[in-house]
Image (cartoon, rainbow, N blue to C red; front, side):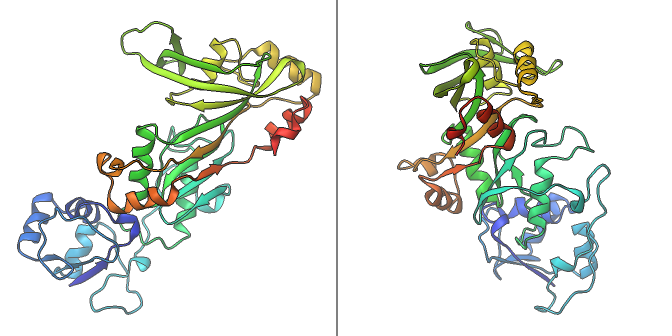
Length: 365
C-alpha cells in the first residue's frame, strides 16, 4: 500500500487526469479498473475519477512498491520513516538531466517582483527568451523551474510555466502559475483580455496626443516578422493598442505608455513603426539611421529596443465571471485576492540611461 497527499500545486484538477500524469506508465483503462475495484481510493473511499482534487486529499494505492514504482516510471530510494507504506517524494531519485538543459547552478538569478501561493511575476531582462526555441536555449521558464525547485511546493504532477510571453529583447513582467489553480486563472484572464497590460517605450517623433491603433495583423513565420493592414485579409487577426504620451524628450523623442489590448507577436513594435513612431533601438521594425545616430551622438550602444512591460493590473471579478470562465473555487478565490492589484517591474538600467540622456530621468522613478 502506498499513500500520497495532494498539495496546492496539483489541486483543482480531476482525479483521473492527475492519475494519468502521476502513474504515467499505466494505461488509462487500467486506472479506471483500479478505481472501480477500490485499488485506488480517495480519502479512504471509492472514486470514479471525476472528482476534483483539493489540498490535503489523500490517495491510497493498494499496489506493491514494485508495481507502484513501475507505473510511476521514476525509481525510488528508501527515505525517512513516515506513515506506513507512504512514498517519500523528496527522496525519489532524480531523473537524469535532459540533453541540452542548463544545470540550475549555472542559470542567472530570477528577478521575482511578486509572488503568493498560486502565482509568480518575474522581471525578464532583455536578451532572455521567455520559453525555449531549441533544446539548448536558456529561458525564463528554466529560471522559474529552478527557483521553485528550491522551494518545497509539494507538486506531484504540476510543472510551473509562463502564462504570457515577451520578445527576447523586450524586458519586463512575465506571469507564471505556481499551482494549477494559479495557471488556470492567469490563462483565463489573459485569454479574455481582462488583465491590463501596460508597457513603456521610447519612440522617435514628438507626440502630444494619444494614439489608438487598430489594424489587421498576420505573422510570417519564415521571416519572423509581422505584417499589418488597414483592411481585413484572409487569416488576419485584430491588433489593437492605445498609447499615451508620458513625456516629451530631447532630440524629438517621446516617452510612451502603451496599453496593449490584443497582444500579438511584435505587435507594439510593428504598429508604432507603421504609425511613424518606431521604438528606439529596435533593429527589426525601427529606423536604423535613427538608432545609429543616437548611439554615435551619445557613445552609447543600443543593444535592444527600449520597450519594457511595466505593469499588469487585475480587475475585480464581476458577478458570475468565475463561473463563466470555468474557474475552480481555488482559482476564483485567488482572483479575489489579486483584485485591484497592480504589479510593477522597475525600468532596467539601459532604459534609465537613455531617459537620462534625453532629459526624462524624472519619469524613471
